[in-house]
View (cartoon, rainbow, N blue to C red):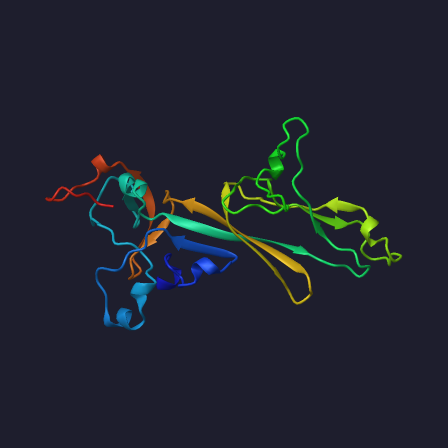
Length: 237
């Protein structure tokens, strides 16, 4: 189950932009370890959390390896993760010497503020880091020329009409812009990459497992006062 574990994937995970990345918010150093774990430096890139587990029968929500979780532990951050997704936008230069543009946000004439779709945009037409992005809002306000194939006379490349082809956010849940990277590729085109972040907490149906493959899904999230307690007064997670 180590290959499917969620935790710290690498020491440079904050400096890379992956297509899809899951990170555990509060990874723990394992309380019990083997010689192999010490040899591979697993403690530097932990994958998992230490939990208090009671192996017992509790109502009917623990049938077929289901797990009953403590709501108070989830509120304190147990099992919380961050989901990173990347969005990219390419600015090309075409054969007739026309090229794509990034335009600034459209401003409402009444309020003198950007329209709702362009609220996350900075003055350069790219979303600012730290901005909250909702569905159908614009990440990059890109426009491309209407004529890209035919050869234009010299000096008329700047007069070609452009149409809006913005890069929009299509997710159902809001996200936050973590990073913005501007680079180029082998085709001499500019590449704009945006790293979007979502914070999620455990819910019914999520799969948890020990390091030994004893996996099960969450069947119930119970209040802390309804969970069993030990002789020292602490409850299960």
